[in-house]
Amino acid sequence: MKKGLIIVFGKDDIDFDNTIIFNVLNKQKVTICLVNNGNYNKVQQLLSSLKEVSDTNVFTLSLKKEKSLLSAVKAGVRSLVNKYDFETIIYTSPKDINHKNYNTKFIEAFSNSFHERKDKRVLLRTLYAIDEVKNKIKGVNSLFHL
Image 1: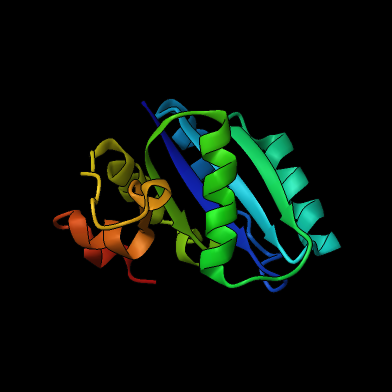
Image 2 (image 1 turned 60 degrees about the horizontal axis):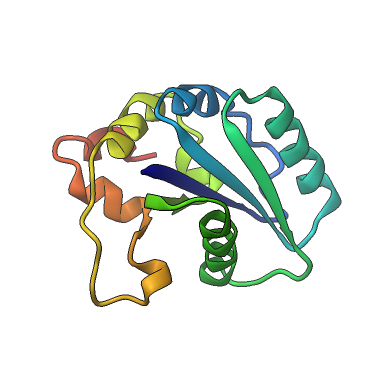
């Protein structure tokens, strides 16, 4: 089964440049959904350029109005599950993954398998925040602090 990553971009996230993680995740067969939360033109240009330079399966989603993080993530989840069946979906903001030591530890997160949570709605049972992933991986927390 596939694994997914949702990165929610807001109007202040136009300086994201961590394209290395996209290419490293390609080896793990991770599908990446870049969400433009608020339909900002500069953010959309950034997401389009990230998609062009990436070898990974990347697609973009643009929300017409700015929504809460959870609402934007849910929109990303719906887009992902409409295309494929996912074992795990992790969501984050660009600020949480824009760190030089992050790439290898982030890959470790995707190599682990997570158990479905039965207490969540069916759509969200395989969805994890990056903070949950940090806590599940033993010995990784020191490298995740930004």
